[in-house]
Amino acid sequence: MPRNKSEVFAPKGLLKMLMLKIASTKPVTGVEIMQDVPEMTENLWSPSPGSVYYLLGEMEKDGLVIRVPTGEPGIKRYVASEKGKLSLDTFKLEAKKNLHRQLVMLRILSDLTENNSVSDAISSVAKKIATR
Image (cartoon, rainbow, N blue to C red; front, side, top):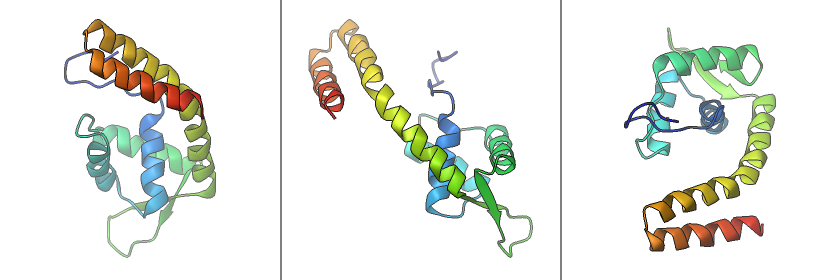
């Protein structure tokens, strides 16, 4: 759970998967990741430099990303390796399984706020996901 009003709950491993998704589309730097994640999350989440650079190091050590030559002094760019892309695909499958459960919980929260139109919309989406 978030510790203060400005924190957003993010499932464990989500930052790593967002980083792999970004690195699957282009060679990327840590700074670019820190710019892309807020855009992807509608500015609800800005990962810290410590989190991003630590994960890049761990992901490189684990073979999930590969550092690519840039010709730019001091600039490190990374791309997702095949192992990283496979890890991302596996995460996507798990995310699809968990999405329905998360939507049910959102519907319950919406019910508690007595916002029937949102509850109905969430229920509709949850049913579509459950049938896929």
